[in-house]
Image 1 (tube, chains in turn red, orange):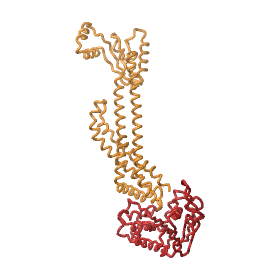
Image 2: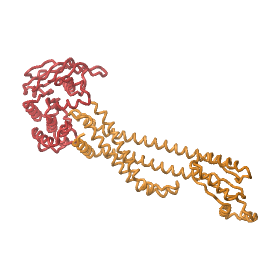
Image 3: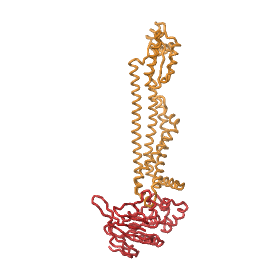
Length: 228
Length: 310
């Protein structure tokens, strides 16, 4: 479903920084893959490649046999709708309420009003925020904001949910809740790619773990643990 | 585009406008200044034009006839002058009228009046005052008169003199033409510079306003929104800034033109800006609000573009 084919990324700054070096792996539908590594190991760059936020220096990333970086800028949004995204810093729209943030993702996908009216409360219920739908992001706690972000990521029923350090800014209780939600989404059949450097999360998941170090994949375990 | 999409875009634009209250207020204020400048230059153009017209109106060419010239001959010349495409008005001043004018002009000058009495007879000839449509056309009118003079060479010419051929009169006309044409050119240059500057300032303000939303635009892209769908609400917002600023300016002009109306009429001659404003309100409405909305839309459209490239 997702295939990284010998992907390298070199940032040409003052001195060249190698963010990814010859990375190859694939993700099957329905998998729950965790990518672990220290800060600067290349986890976020890996995600950016999948979202076409950045281009690889060499190699290619395929999503359902489409080379992501050959999709023109004007059409990339259709592809992005198949990938739900959750970020460490939540990235909610500050001027929109929880409800509107989620509705925006549906509007952008051109979904009809009736569907939005029924789906948004439903998905907010799912992340246990039914009573906060009219609150703005700044009125919500970090954990609540992240749950809104997750609701936004799944509302269009994407094939994949990509979560880039979603628990990085959360306390242990909220971390646990977010991971439980992701697990629940995975159980319903959605592929999950999670990057984290939280040992507890990885060890409790007992799912596939890809370990990265300095831009390279150094381990890929079927049922892995956090080993670094 | 589907109606539901249009509705969503309008709603998003209005909501953003309202929720970004401070940014909206700042943008509206800057844009009000811009549109005010645009409006003021419209007025300045009108005032300048009317003042120049007034000035040009003061210019004329006078044809003096000999005292013995028969009236019907003079009226014939008046008629043929009137037939020229360059001529706007020809005023006939008869000998008696000329004398009455002379008396009035010199009513406090006993010496001159006494001299006039001594003469007994009316020493003044009839005059035709010729006004051209444009100040540059006096030369051809004068040439025509010269020909007229030549044609009547059978007998003695009835035209005593045409003052266009006076060196002084001619120099004054030339100078007037130079002053008025350079005044309109200078006015135009100043207007263009002013408008250009204020538009640039407005443009930058809107760019800054959208700069504050750059992260939002990125997030919208990442959740799969199309470029046009992201851009449109910003354009709506920009047009709304323009519309409100335009209304403010139109409102502001009402007391302002009233205040300077009579002053402008007496100082520049002819035009009262207050009545001009009321009389041409549709023109002002369309040009000021139109400029505002166009400016807002274009500035927003361009400003969002740079953040969409992801």
